[in-house]
Image (cartoon, rainbow, N blue to C red; front, side, top):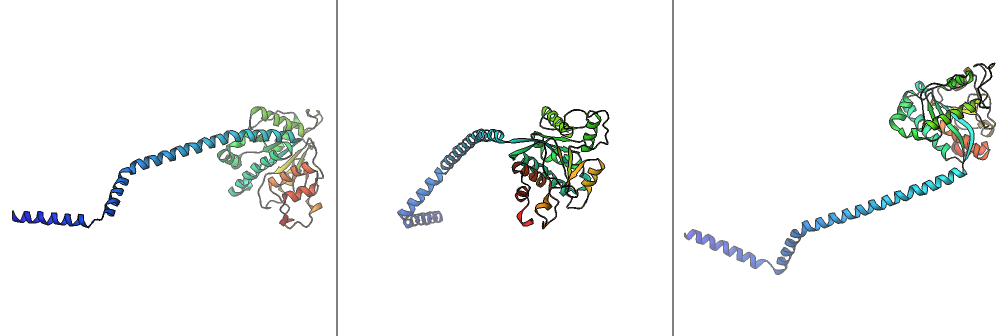
Length: 314
């Protein structure tokens, strides 16, 4: 009993001593801290609400901006269309070289074709349409897998048929067969008709005495290996670009194809303006197309080359 009383006395004394040692300032701080702890849930809830309102406001503003942007883009696009000139010729990209490229080169060609489409669409003077022939294999698979938007491209037709098959069927009056794809069935038929008219300038089937061996006068295969030089770009022609990324491995490949199928062939007139070109004269697909549309815009080959080929290579 005496021991319990002694312990109680000791505890009371310690508590009293501790209370006496705490200053008023410290007590105020303790009270303030206690209040802050009690108010913390309410403050956090208020902060969450402020963030929620701010996020909603930003989303609302973003939606408003997005609604305004298409209107502006549409107006600009309509204005651009009014000032755009359509040149009545077709550019065909011959994609038959799938087996001659590495996977890395297929990826590069994919980008070059997409870039070519963009170049023609943005040009002041545009080719009437683009046609990708022999569109199959790894190149086609890559487009389907990674760039499904290509089906919405305007004035572009993709076909699994080869260029020579299309020309041969047209010359013999046989209805063309094979898979084609474009932004719509109507545009597909329009592009097909444009292609056929370009191959046969008068737009009619050839005479009975014509044979498949007759060289198509309106198909010109562009290749750096040709001895012929392209002097100008004419209407109602099909200008063919070999869709090949080969790092200059396959010399005369496109030229041999053109000769084999009786296509006319020519090289761009680079030598006439830049005979001392520092690098090889083999250009990428999109560079060739950009040179062509640049020439259409100003009718000046030298300016077209200077615009496309980097100055360090001239």
